[in-house]
Amino acid sequence: MIWSSLFPNAVLQTWRRTGLTGRLATGLLAIIVFTLVWDALANMVDARIRWPLTGLAAAAGWARLGLSIRPMLVLMIVGFAFDSVSGAPFGVFPLVFLSTYAVLASTSLLLGSEMDPVTGSILPFLGMGFGVFVLWVFASVLASAPINPIPLLIAWVTSCVFYALFEGLFDLHSFKTSATSG
Amino acid sequence: MASFSQYGRRKRPLRQLALAVFIVLSLALLVAQTAPVISRNLTPVRTLAGDLQTFGDRREQTVAGDEAPGIWARLTGQADTARRIKQLENEVAELSRYRQAAIAMNERFFAYQAMLNAVDDAPIDWAQQSKTVRIVAETDGPFADTLLADAGRRSGVQVDDVAFNEMGLVGRVIAVGERSSRILMITDFNSRVPVMGERSGVRAVLYGSRDLVGRLSDLPEDDGFIIGERILTSGEGGVFPRGLVAGFVYGSPRDWRVRFTMADARGGFVRLLPPPTIPSPEAEPATDDGETVEAAVQVDDAPVVSE
Image 1 (cartoon, rainbow over the protein chains, first blue to last red):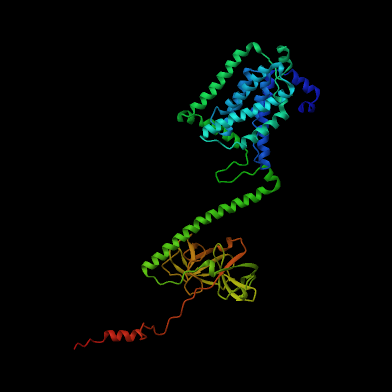
Image 2 (image 1 turned 90 degrees about the vertical axis):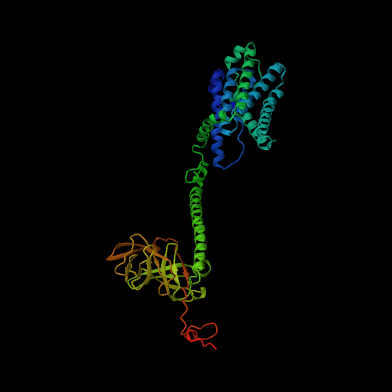
């Protein structure tokens, strides 16, 4: 992983021992911090780049563990926050994030140990693409007309870049969970 | 890249149920918002989120319409320029309102004039007849309070041209060179300007006194100005056009003073306007058929002889 080489061993050891709640909190914090920093940077350089759907990246990362109630709850909260900020009707982003989470988690359960590394690497990006598609469908239905997909595609690309860079923060495989899952 | 796992397979049905419940809840909320009552109840949540989002944001709009500058603008110095541009835009917007009002009043004025069949000078076309010149020197020594402008005969400046700036009357041209002209300010001792009160209508003569304060004299004994009213040129004497602002009156009936408004201008430019031209009266006004009025009256008064 790219990010793991940046931290000293002590930090990595602590991260490995961190439980599910701690990792979820870290992921949530990463979403908040990144969204704020992105907004500030975009304002500084007067950029109009589509901000990544960090919640989508979180859904893709957390779904690797399979279904779990706490990630769903966090995704719901993040989704409502996205609804508030983006001006979307309440419920759209929770649905998008949860559907992405459900599809990826189901696929991971379905394929299980048969999944090869290449598929495992590509699957989160495809899952995020599915989430963006769901978002486009909802937006088009609410607008009563197909909306321009280009901004959403750009958001998908930035989300993929965000996921590739920070996927470690959304990894729920901990020492504890590995031990319990055997 | 971490691999997918099958953690917690035993609790899967419960989690699947939870996932379904969350999705259904979200969908229900989405559908419920089609009802205006529910949508209205969610508005405060959205406005709160909007407030939080715009807090410290450079796109935040204040009541005055100003835009809070971003960090980048502050660092590069663009913030001051942007603020100045915004300020000038506001001034232009405000002046545009006055311009519209002036146009409307002008139209009404001419309509009234036509209805009354009033005889008046030709209206002054300020844009066409006046020219803007720059003040290059100011002489405020003990002998004369004058300004030197950078335009003279070559630019069409003439002696007795009236000078005014954006705040009011400045003076009149007393000497013209090829490329320069000298303006005697109304603050000079030698300056005499026929004026009137804007509201009271009282006529007087405004004297300069070299200290940005003028004195009013030769006004009727039983009349007085209203303190605070504007003093305008009356147009009498034909040197200054009627209606130019000279200042504001203050003081007492024994000693009326005028605070000149021209001093409030900061531009360093004045506009020069040719003095009003009043045609000399004819010695014997002629009728249409060439006879004098007196003769015509005599003809009219002649007894009619009936055959």
